[in-house]
Figure 1 (tube, rainbow, N blue to C red):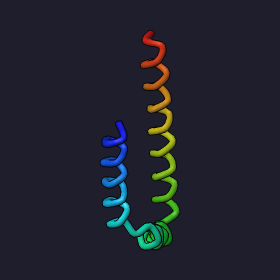
Figure 2 (figure 1 turned 135 degrees about the vertical axis):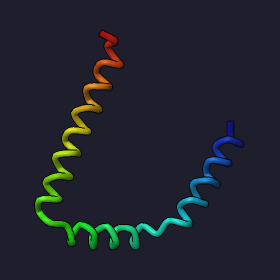
Figure 3 (figure 1 turned 90 degrees about the vertical axis):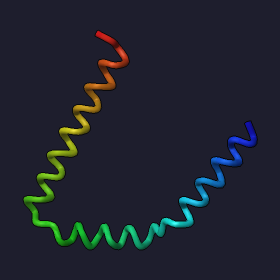
Length: 65
């Protein structure tokens, strides 16, 4: 079991080493700043729909109606 945890930790460190969070956040902020308000509303509506669908799927998979 320790061997599995050790390998997973090495994979996490390898991925984290290639991922610069500050750079990614700055790029994301620039992309968001360039969006039109209608595009933001479209994204929010889609996210709301996706969250509702996920809630529906989880509810019915748990209760198996």
